[in-house]
Image 1 (tube, rainbow, N blue to C red):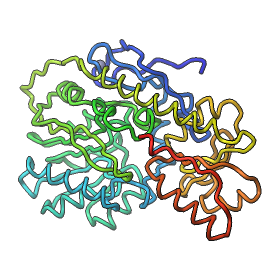
Image 2 (image 1 turned 90 degrees about the vertical axis):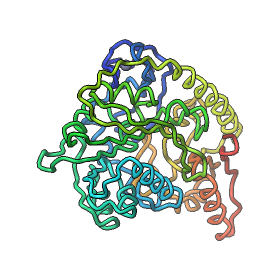
Image 3 (image 1 turned 120 degrees about the horizontal axis):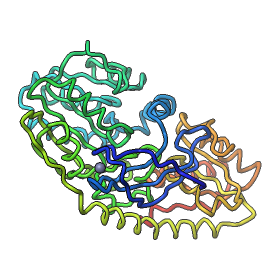
Length: 408
Ligand SMILES: [Zn+2]
């Protein structure tokens, strides 16, 4: 990479003074605004870790509306359609209910996805819940599956006519935003006096605890890396007092643990919060990077050991394949093919190569032999089973299928 613009101030404290931690790069869908990668940096003023990307909010908004993967029920999260996801959302609703005792409180979930959290709140007796999401498919699903009021707006264009709320929920949204402080101002404007905000994001202090894929947390979607201290610094700057913060663990599709940091805050105009420097996150992040690199080296060694005369087919196109394609094993001329089961991805191109549907794998293999690399670590077992079945049902012997979840 030649040069990265370093022009994003700290999203928590707006300081421009940063210290570079690592440069990450991806081979994303052709035309994706985040192609070219970014530096992960630490703010030297408050200690916050974030992506110093030159991408603009308009470019990101376009990405989230046009390339949203949340529209496929079987692959997405946030709708409670899988057992692990349903449990996560039910636990979150139960936790929130300990602090919000009035069941008629007007509650909005900003970035409600498929409405799973709202559904669990309704199950607990809350009768005045509203969803907002930028995706029209999510709004339709929420209205159908949850049956509550739901509107299609991006966070930054919610009209005043929507009225005020007693509780604002923002789960797994803030880590995506370029302009985090504007989001908190919007929360502030939407909130009744004495209202509460519940925020939840991946917990950067715990990335090192479970490696979902090497350097997975530094991806094209997650550009802010929150901790309990960062939540307090952010909310404290807008006179939100801390009610509670903490780390929670839930299970994702692979049955691996996932750590999230949560916080409940209440507006308090008398609050005179003094910013604290996050003094432990840098070592936590470095441990995560070191662990990731050990695994990544093994993966690269495995791929380098595949027959050189054959292309490698990546199956399962997501953040990990974007990174793999940028490593030296693919940058030095090895031919590759791309397969995915998600209809949202099929037909898109990466570096000029079109992503084919998983069901086309055998036909393509008959045209030209290749090795297979399962590049979705979360769905590895299911993908392997599907591939083996496809070959066997057609009386063919499957080729070498590399997978890496055993390394995690
Ligand atoms: Zn800062």
